[in-house]
Image (cartoon, rainbow, N blue to C red):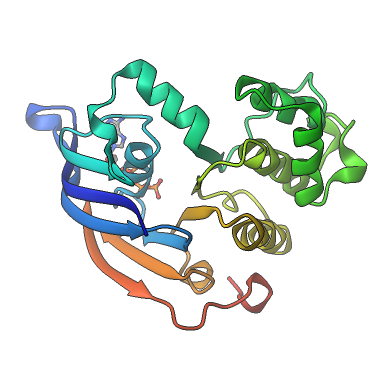
Length: 234
Ligand SMILES: Nc1ncnc2c1ncn2[C@@H]1O[C@H](COP(=O)(O)OP(=O)(O)OP(=O)(O)O)[C@@H](O)[C@H]1O
């Protein structure tokens, strides 16, 4: 099944001398239910692409269909609804509220989607933090904070998890743990995952690797034998 269809998608920033063509006429089909890595050097357009897929920003031209709906035709309110109901975001920075405990941080976002404290606790259990739910962010390690932010993203059971370099600030072993959590969510909940990285090694765990360079798609490769996170090194 199709998740996204991108048709002649372009995104420019600025104008005149400062014009940047961040995405250049991209045509792409992204299937549902896969663990997809978007791989490319700094400045290749990965975050710009993710922002478009998550309805955080609008393209300059072109279309994005989510399943069969043109999400580029959405107004602001519809964009917000789409983000809330369909997408979970995980970033390099954890963006947790320091005065809320782990479970409250998750609840704070789940409440917006009409879910309960039990949903928040379940999400924290999925990322292996049952014994840390009352801790505040300042009492948690970087990897634990990132797992809280993943719990926050998955508590509402989004169809799509968009991850922008979530292991970028973590040491190797903690990064592996975060990748394992994401793989487990992918397997257990069938969530489609798009994961941005510049690491060729991390790309080995993906079902599909989309390579980007200078705002263009270089290649889309199916990985016959994706590795487990514990098998990669970087
Ligand atoms: N808000 C903006 N205004 C102007 N230019 C921007 C803006 N956001 C991104 N760009 C430019 O668009 C291009 C693509 O940036 P983008 O952040 O999508 O790349 P990236 O592959 O995610 O890079 P990184 O790995 O460093 O995060 C870059 O040349 C960047 O400087």
